[in-house]
Length: 293
Image 1 (cartoon, rainbow, N blue to C red):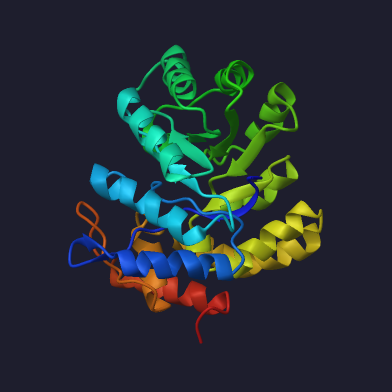
Image 2: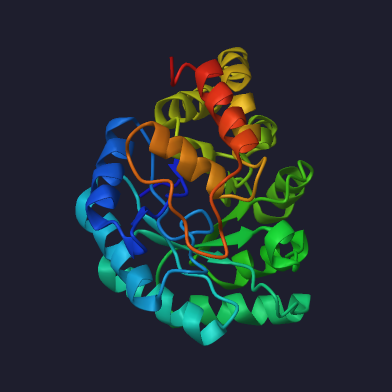
């Protein structure tokens, strides 16, 4: 399996407080039909902090079941507990996921040596391709280019990264120390255009939940070096990229997907329904992108 292109960080649909499995199955199939290149269940956008361990595992299983090998499944398996991250990663492998997305440990604020030891322990415990997810805005910890290069050199199954730092010097610096084959996926929709120009090969995307076809067309354009077409698509998508974060994600993206009739806008506490001003911004951005009349 190759990990590239547009990979939505899937929302987790809820209905009356419970995971809406039927809506999730339908959503997975819609994403594939719309051209998404891979799927990422139970990441941050999938509300991984508030799903139970049983729900977490079930969501990975459903995603694999529905995908049927048509596109890669990159299961979110991270935790700020190394033992728990190993457990989730073991389960992802057993469930048939193609790779694991493992976030830099949050809240604990480990040192670079601690971050290295965390990922080394997971990579040693489970033989599955691992993507290191760097999102310092949420985790506080920030894996350095050098620590990531060390992990890639020491652990053959650490094959790439999802970088949501929005630091566009990182992909170039990482490429120089980890080589061209080290997979670099953006985790920040708005800067994915520049990220790919620096050597990235795709995005794990929030916006692709709402606009999968446009996001996959955008990624395909960058991957064939057609940046003029990519820029036209970026102009259509940029207001939507912005609207997805006018309030804490995944509130806006769940509301957007609900406007397409694919799920309820419901999220779990401490996430609350989005404000009227956010709803307006989301609707206007969807109209601009041609997703709503």
